[in-house]
Image (cartoon, rainbow, N blue to C red):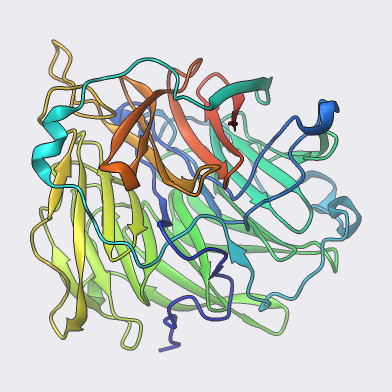
Amino acid sequence: MDDWGGGGRGGYRGRGTSRGFGGGGGRYNDNYYGGRGGRGGGGYYDGGGSGGFYDGGRGGGRSGRGGYVDSYQGGGYQGGGGYDDGGYQGGNYRGGGGRFNDGGSRRGFRGGRTWQNPGQKRQQQQYNANPPPNLALLKTIQAHSGAVTCLSYDQATNALFTGSKDGKIKQWDCNSGQIVHEESLNGQVDAILFIQGFLFVAYVKGSDPRNQDGIINFYNTAAGKTQMIPGHRGHINQMLAFNNLLFSCGQDCSIRVWGMEGEAFVCKHILDKDKGGHTHPIYAFEIINGFLVSGDSSGCLKIWDSNTGMCAQTLPNAHAGIISSILQYGSNILTGSADGSMKVWELLSPPVPTAVVKAEPIDSYFGDDGAGRGGGRYRSGGSPNSILTMDGSPDNKGESILAVSTLHNGVNVFNVDQSMALLGTLPGVDLSRAITNVPGAAIIVGDDNGQVHIYSWSG
């Protein structure tokens, strides 16, 4: 099959930095405590006293993901056939442009670090409800009338895209802080990916939750052309782009690999149970060292071989609940779950024919320590403090920072380079399914009240 490997060479996903995190999250059904969203590569900043958005030191764009409708019964997707007025036009993007295969830096960072946090250190931490030092709330924007489900940032145009359960996608100019464009899909926006002048929007068409089609709208903003890409059944939980290919995963338990033929996208491969794949809805995936790593609603983690397109390794009980996030930190994979735990998996070097990661995690956090630090605190009713999303990025000093959004504790911020030291809790956020970063400058959070919160690193 077409090789999606190459360790970040070419395609979309060249990394702009040399260490720390890479990767994305997933999301999960609102049946499981509110769903979760994705994130983009940059965000807002109030620089220069202009009241606008951040305009410097930005990372590249990346995938965004949203959350399922409540019990798959959000309704609304009447007719849902694309943006009003025929979609975005090239002029809306302040230069748009770029070739589809132009590479492009993806925000975040990953590289040669190893996990240096022995398990016994976990018990030394206490829950800290104070705001993290040097990270202040800069402003809060009422961006949507429904929960913010996904964010995607574009470095070239300095634009932020937000998607919501209110069925709208909005483009924000990060220089002026104003809405540049707003469209309605008449149904929940599940995922957004904007990169190199190309916009991908995933949504569900059909009002009957038992008979819905997952659709990706593709917009070539430079040429002013659009395409509707059908293929999935039900919600599309995440998209990512790598080595000139688009990947999507969803409720139908499949991963689809899309490539361009001429100016149109076509489905090149379907990675499903016939190739050793998932038998439950897939909520998170990521390309790591040329392997595709995916997690589903049963807590099963799978690793795919880019040369054969077959599943190379299965960890059937990686978690006891939905795998909602997958990140890379150096030679390790971090997985967050609705069971309330984050686990650390070590990549084998080199991989062997039947294994890419060690069969058992080398560390585990939050799930049973009772500290309530971003996971693991159980209410009297017994519900775990589910991890809704995780996002990793450097702070203003280049340290590896991990933001973890949970069901009961809001968004907690950790310094991974300092043995997962808990820095504190972001103020003003109750439930978040979408987090993104301006590496070294800001953390952006979208919440279930439709608000976008901007936190700035300082000092």
